[in-house]
Image (cartoon, rainbow, N blue to C red; front, top):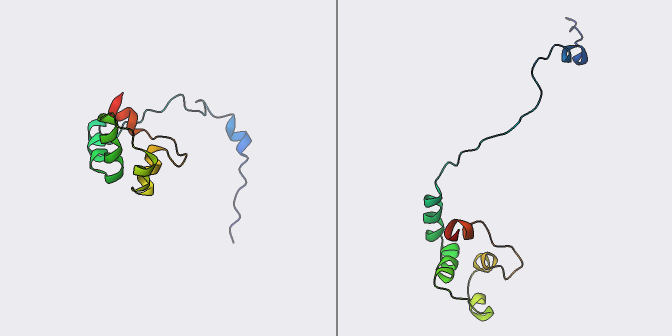
Length: 91
C-alpha cells in the first residue's frame, strides 16, 4: 500500500499571493422584468391581485375567502408579506 505524503495546509498558505475573498458578485437576470410581468399577469392568483391593484380595488375579506389560499397569501390576508411583483408592476 502506498503511503500518502502529508501536506500541511498552513505551510501552503504562505505561498498564496492573491486575497482569499470576493469583493463583489454580479448576477445578471435570466429573464427581463417585462417577461416577469407577463408571467405574473398570466398567473391565476398573482394576475388577479395585479388587476385589483391596477383598478384601485380593495377586495373585502368575504371576497378574498372565495379565492384560493395562494391568492389570499399574495394579498397578505394570512400574514404573508406582499412579494416582489408589486415593485415589478408598479415601481
